[in-house]
Length: 326
Image (cartoon, rainbow, N blue to C red; front, side, top):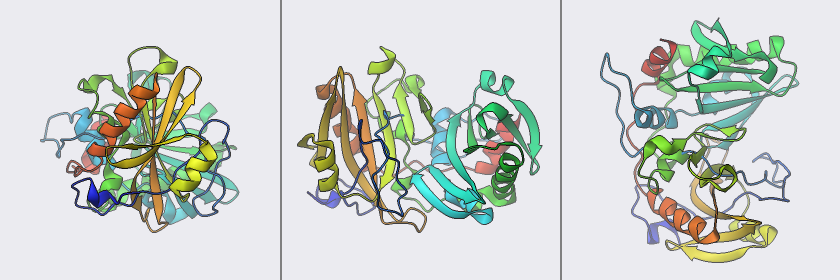
């Protein structure tokens, strides 16, 4: 496998390695335990290629919101009051709160319809939207995105406690939790924008998968749409190929594995290695889903090239929280 520095200009050294499973390989894994990874979700959203802090009095664009939220380290939001904080992707983290599993997802879609269906409340001094039957609280960040806190069950006090931990982290100094510039700030929709010129068609969600680690192009038949997913995995790429039993190919100078799935197709490739907020090294598995294997390979090659670009500069998360609350 070629080193990333051999085929992409980038300010970071990238190592092509491990990924996650598809289809029948549906066991979920913790990056710490070395067990089988979760099933390959259809990919979803990417990060913008441009973006800066919004000017006072102006509403930030979707690209600016993604660029800023993409630089936010999710485990840093929940780790102060929990244990075993474990990154699941560049923008997703899970942690343990007593007997309850907590999941923090950065960049979930939050439009007017979603807000009207939720209960508005004050959590740690911030506006938040809670959907009790989903055991979920979302802090709005920007006009149409948010930072979601979910728990596996129990809701009630457990959800309130988890949301308070994240809200306190955001309210204390959210901008101090931004990552140093690096590939983990890239988002699914930002990467997918390299292949879809109309940014309005990029949606940060695929079914129940949502946030900056997921993106879909909202055109065509729902089950055949082009999507991108980013996940962390400790698995070697050779092991991924063996388990998926797909066709190993080279795309944009990089190893990938093609897996036909009935009427559609998945392609896996590893984009970069990360210390994942001190939990690494982990590899970022990019999973592209498309209607045909030819299209999935074309999109994957474009994503590989886009991953070599420097992320757009982040703005202020604190300002996004103010805009989101309006």
